[in-house]
Image (cartoon, rainbow, N blue to C red; front, side, top):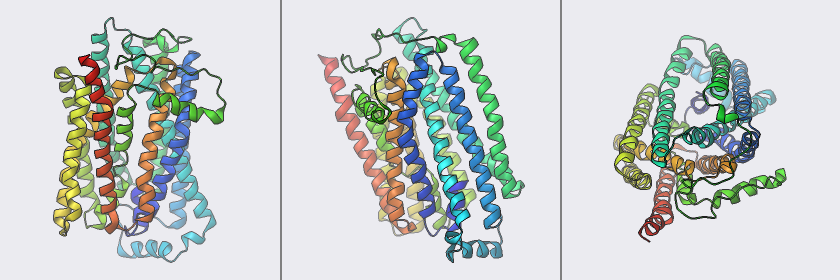
Amino acid sequence: CLTIWLAQLTEYKSLLLVSTYGVALQLIVCLATPVLGRFIDDMAKNGKRSMMAIRLIAAENMCVLLATLSCAYLLGRTGTLNLTQQNDDQAHTQSSYFSEGSFWQDPLALVLLGTIHFLGGSAQALDKSFLVAVERDWIVVMASKNASREAEEGWLSATNVVLKQIDLSCQILAPAISGWVLTLLPPTFGIVWVGLWNCLALLVEGLSVHVIGSRLVPELNSTGFDLEPNPNDDVEGEGGHLLEDDGNNSNCMSGWKSLQLYFAQSVVFAGLGLALLYFNVLTFSGMMTAFLVSKGMSLSSIGMWRGFASTVGLLATCIYNQSTKHFSLQFTALWSIIWEFLCLSLTFASVFSTSTQVKLALLIGGVLPSRIGLWVYDIAVTQLYQQSVAETVRGQVGGTQMSLNAFMELLPYGLAIVCHKPEQFSILISGGYFAVGLAMLLYGFGFYMPYQRRRTL
């Protein structure tokens, strides 16, 4: 909602505010997740995984609550804004407030905007860190209860699919429910409702974590690590890649140490390929939404296409499940990244079209099927890391992956600050397309081909 509001403040004539918010979010995630990853490892070593998760959840939801309250107050200060129903007089008043420079001369409004940027970025960093804890650590601990390697890999694959399906389902339902609430209620009260909903989520998530850690999977809160490496962990079959943290690093060196640990992993090229996919803005994100609106597409139509994209993502999880039953995990990741590149070739062709309708058709027609490749590759790389990273550094390696993802996602926002006119969106399309192509080359030549050579030896 916030990115759409920021775009509407400029009448969708500029991507500047959307870009600054995106830069703030990704910069905070980039800087904070390696440190939070070290915190995850330390708490896991001391048998406090549940406590760590509850702290992350509580901090995240408090940031969201404070951000929504700040947003509500800012909306009240600058004038009531209805994202779905707004007459011409209201639109003119709001537009003049910003276009005439009144907003930039209001110190409190600027402080509130900065607060929203900071709290939004902090909530995002905490959310990503919780995701690292669950996807890269908790799931692996649960999978280790299986007796054989085949059973463990099968359980990981099935569980990763279910988690991704839940995530994508929430991405479909949450915007629809929030949009319905914001339509029925005055905008200020609607945003406060979103904040209160996060308070309720805090209670539900906290209770769920407690039950899982104390009753269902008590192994999560066992003290210490099993320092004997699992013979199934190194999917490449090479020793020496499972480096461990000695625990003697100062805070200022922890980021560098985490980066070293990340690049020492045998699946690093697969992870770098995943990070490059985040440079791509063709995901129905805030910038793409602003561009589509600038070309005359309604928000309801964009919402419909976004729902289709999420539905295609759900389809991708089923395809991944079938692919891993017939092909190796490594080959599944290979065909998925190639598929995404081929689909986005159609989107890249839109850059050369002079017809608005053709441009939009090529853009959406390429983005929708590309989501299959994106999510299949995402799940495959996640499982490669789950099977290869030592227990002692899962948090740091996962946190560094999130940091690199955020850095790559930050770059197009930074580029959009310079190229903020909608007609310059083709530059961002081209950049994302070539980033996906580079990801394909990194995975194919940096990871898959060496893997195949080792198998034939």
